[in-house]
Length: 78
Image (tube, helix red, strand yellow):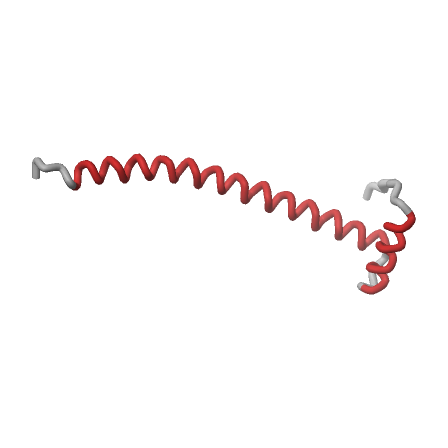
């Protein structure tokens, strides 16, 4: 496992310690979980954005196809 050194303002460290103690975690475990949670949140947001983008593309194609079906369905040649 790799050790990472970071600089954090004292008031943030006190807040981290307070929250970690409340959860019966070490400072290191608390920070590790916070980083993992942030990574998951970012991955979830990225996945959601990709789905929205794909949905928009499909929606546009569906509108074109629906318009074509509408034109055929109401074609006076029937």
